[in-house]
Length: 99
Image (cartoon, rainbow, N blue to C red; front, side):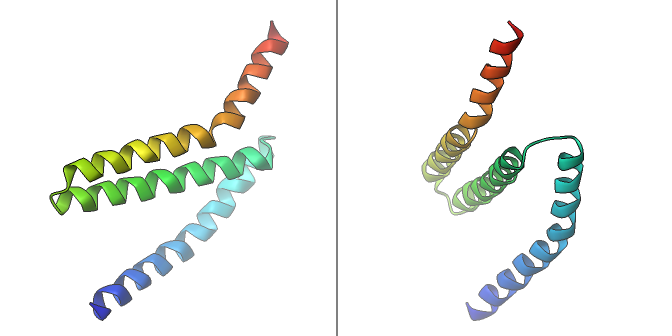
């Protein structure tokens, strides 16, 4: 059990260190495109929610708990929907300005 936790912690640390440079590069590209920092933050949070939800659902399915996996996916979709509301509001305001 302790070995499994240590391996998982090592893998997660590796991915965080690997993703740090990539995230900084993506953030720079978004800033050069003129996208607001608040939207960049929402994009990264949504990506994290999607990854965590997918991993959780797959672990539940591997354990034979299909109903819990479906519930986890549903809650993940709900979280993404709530997190995306400010972007949707800005989109509607843009459409309103164009009309």
